[in-house]
Image 1: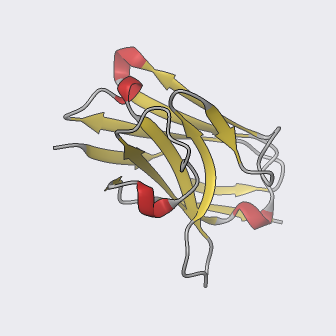
Image 2: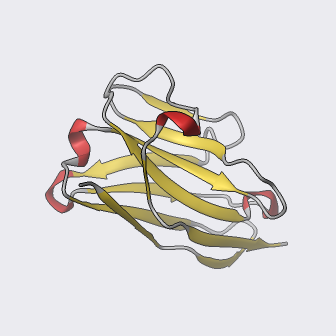
Length: 124
């Protein structure tokens, strides 16, 4: 059974940086497609942010500011977030799917495994 645990969220000011972590127990993350999604206040759906598996993808809204990476020794995927904006405020979730070369990397329904989420708040 795969369990994912996010950490690293917090309250920051616009322009600051944060690094989110997604740690796993039960499966090796380097063999999975791992995605980051976020749910903004008042929004029902989760928005795709980034994914890393056979390929690396970013949403247009974070491209150039966010970086997804993996540290195999810690079985942890990171989301480095730079130049944060107030519109980045959301609960951030990591998720995993077994299809390493997934073409549906940006669809939350394709990810069966989810963490509990971590809050990121960016003040202006």
